[in-house]
Length: 226
Image (cartoon, rainbow, N blue to C red; front, side, top):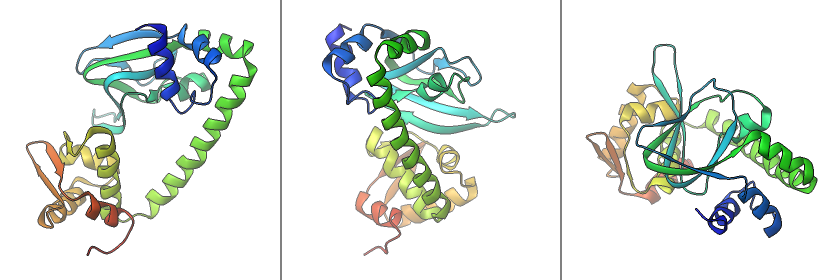
């Protein structure tokens, strides 16, 4: 990937969006392209965080695993989105594992190179701190809202978030949706059955298709359906 494409990709991320062209070009020279096959792991939970990444093509799934091996899906990342940066900025091991979903290309920046860059570009550090502060406030708000949501609203909002990244047909089982929402499998099955009966979604064979996004939005906002 030529430097111009790397610069454009960096510009798409929220953390680097406010940087000027010279700052972006400096970062682009540090970025290294990597390719991953389907289901190949980019990093594992607990590994030293030497790199952070931005998705160029494909999708990345970030998960945590219980001692029994049960997977808890934390997030999905699509082109233009960054992952692994929090651990890199904190200098701590990765808190979860990242795996390619299908053929995937990313660009990575090594922690040591990034810190050296920040040492000579203090204005970039201030811009990044500002964006991370906004992210933290948003995350706190989301956690507060999630705790207060009923099961239907929580599942509706997760489905909407996934659809915004992956489209209306989602390749997830009910178990995986339960893992992402923090609901029990039994509760997820009951709620999904209600959604299906109302013709809001269609599900089967490990896939869920959203049929009525407007209805999901109303449920997610706690509003009655028409």
